Length: 87
Image (cartoon, rainbow, N blue to C red; front, side, top):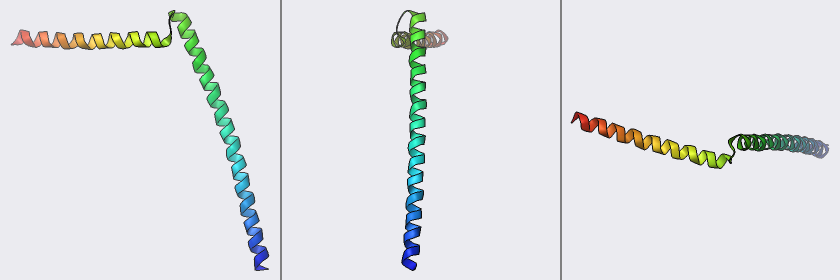
């Protein structure tokens, strides 16, 4: 009798475990599908931006980085000139 109860409990545990695995497999597929949709949206946004800019997003990004570095350097030069004027 105790063996049968243990076997039934083991079978219930296995069934519950299998159901959890199925749930997580479905959830994973759902998340992968949502990720694919987001990746496609980002791809399309990049295409729209590239069309509007007339250049790739990466090119424009690099241009902005260069502009920021130049502005930072100019601010440092201006600050140094201001400090020299005080001294």
